[in-house]
Structures are given as structure tokens and as C-alpha cells.
Length: 251
Length: 251
Image (cartoon, rainbow over all chains, first blue to last red; front, side, top):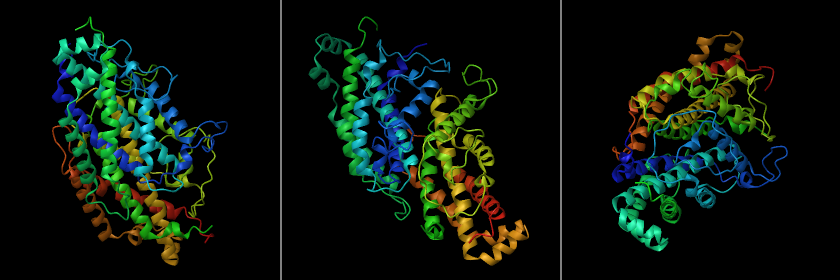
């Protein structure tokens, strides 16, 4: 089975573009609940014996333990936030990805994604406490997973695609461990600007006809800046990590 | 603490209206994956020793077991799909609802919600198999939970609100177990029509500017008919169940 179709840059960018609405929908749904700061505080979870953990971190671990059993993290672009997860209980025949990397976890940006997401939440949610703690952390986890999938998918597949299109230049930069050179070769500023403007428009379109007495509307500029400050640079950092870890003896 | 604010019909309908986008977003997100019929077939889950269950039903149970530990089903409008769920491990002080019913599970429409949802999936998803089994069942569960929350919230709070506004007529019909009379007194056809048209418009608005090469667009008429054939009648059936089980010796 050939995997070259996995690295058609047009297909990859179309898939990444399709994930934008998924991320936006999940952020908007999270923002229907107040910030509920207690859910991020250790010792406030209401779980017996969980003094060191917040409700949010308990939920994230619990979700990932379930997901791990269902085999989520066997998929290259699904990198977990938690360590020491259970082994999959499901055997699924996944097609080969064509990615050339020995340890896929060398490209795990989840820690950084988590911290930028937690900075984002107070910018999309109204202040205060509405008591909907369970729903808040549930939607936090959904949004986080959608963002992480987008970043890791972009990092892995865009990097390999670009490598295949300019093998000799990338190989030289990789052998020289020239991070700056790699970033410069990977960067397409016009494309990045287009993505951010599109994101802003999508957030506005998705909420254009909303009844503001029943739905909280999020600021499209906030999501624009989140893409600019987090999604795009983290994707690029992931591309560099992938390339630095790419096995060069394979094709 | 007074609970009368919980039964302000305007507030309730505003909350129900706000849940519409949540349901729509989750249906659209599910529809980004193919139908993947194998996920609904027993014995195809890939889980060892789960010959009788589909991947979908394993995921639904697994999600609800986690949710049960987090205390989800302590909330009146969160009625589970599965039986024999674990007890909550979280103690959360929930405010009194003001609902007058001894066994909240007397108003559990989850079985019917599940079957109507499974009929809906082939109408929003493209045929075929894309291999994204985990994502498909994950989004099935999110959509199902959003729909069930909407129906149960409507059933419980709308019914109690209407009861409080016309106590003597409802009491007589309840004592006579007059289901037909209750349905007739509960029904506001103009309101139902308005909801369905609004739903259709929201589905169209949410997808109006979408790039159809990167996102699958769902048919707003399908969601319109799902509301007409399932969400609205099931909510009403739940209202009747609530009223027939309402304790009449309380306020």
C-alpha cells in the first residue's frame, strides 16, 4: 500500500482547514459556561483523596485513560497530555502512515498546548461561577483534544510533505541541526496570514445570527490571536521536531 | 433558598434555545466522518471478549461510567443511557432543583433518544468507511448527550413551570391520569413551529460560509425533521411522564 497520498499538501491543508470549525465549535460550546475558576484549582474537585488535583486535571486524565483503552494514541496525530496511560484494549488495523520517525512522542507538544489553552479560557468565557463544573471541564477536554489533533497533524504531515518536496535542502539542514534554517524554509508567511484571517471570519460567521440572550458570543479576535500566538507557532515547532527526528536512511 | 426562579418559562426557553447550537455543532462535527457502519455492529469493535457489543455501545458505556464517577447523573436533566453505572466519587453540593418528583428516573427517555439518534446518523453522514472509528463514536456520544440533556431539561422544567402556572387544571388531569388532556394542555403549536424553523435556519447559518471541499455540510431539513419527529415529541412525552409522577402534596 502506498502512503504517498498522505503527503499531498493540498489534501493536508484541506483537512487542517476542516478542523478549524471543529475547534471553533468546541471553544464556543465551552464558552457557554462561566470560567468557573474552581475547576482549575487543586483540592476543589470534590473527589475524595484528590487534594493535589483539580477537577480539570482529573477529568483530562480520566478521559485519556478511557481514550487510551480505545486505542486513540495509536494514531500518530493523537498525542496524549498525560503520562502512564493504560495500554489499548482494542486491536485496530491502522494503515501505515508513511511518517519516518522512530518515536512519535518526540513530537509531543501537549504540555505547551495545555498551558496556552488554559490562558485562552478566561478570554472566551465570562467571569464567575455558574456551578456547571462538570460541563466546563468536559468541554475543556473536547476543545483541547481538537486543538492538539490539529497541531500534531499539521506538524507531522506538513513537515513530511515539505521534506519530500525538497529533500536535499531539508536533509542538509537536518544534518546540520540548523533550527533557524529549518524554520525559515518551512515558513510561508502569506499562508499563515490567510489562515488567521479565515479563522477570525469563521468565528464571526458561526455566531452571526445567534440570539445573544441565549448564547454567549466569543470574540473572534481572541481566537485569531490564539492561532497567531499558539496554534501556528506550535505547529511549526512540531514540524522542526519531526524533521530533527526524521530517519534519513528511509525514503 | 428559593427555587422558583428555576421555573421562569422565559429563562427555560432561552436555555433550551441556547442548547440548539450545541446540538447542531456536535451533529456537524460527527458528520465530518463517514457513517462507518462497522462501529454500530456487534463483534466489530476490536475489543477482546466483546463479541456482543459494538464499538459505539462500548464507548457509550465507558463514557457514562466515567461521567457517573464525576457525578453527572446527580443532575436532574442528565439521564443516563446505560444501567448499572458506578456511584459518584465526587461530592458536589448541588442546589435544590425545586422539581417535585420522587424518582427522577421515571422521566428517562434515553432509550428512545438513542434509537432516534441512530436513525439520524445515516442522514447526516456520508456513506462509507473512512477508518475514523474512534472519532465517529466519540462524536456520537457527545451529540447524544447534548440531545438527551435538551430533551430531559425541557421535559422536567417546562412541565413544572406550566404546572405552577395552571395548578388546578393540571392537578385535575394528573389525578384523572388523562394523558390526552395533558398533552393538549401542554401543547403550543405556534411555539413548536417557531422552534423548528429556527433550527433549520441555525443549521444553514452555521454552514453558510463553509468551504465544501474541506467540510461536509449537513442538510438543515434533516435536522428540522429530527426536531419535529424526535426532540419535540420526546420532550412532550417527558413532560407528561413528569406530571404523572409529580407529587401533588407538595407546593
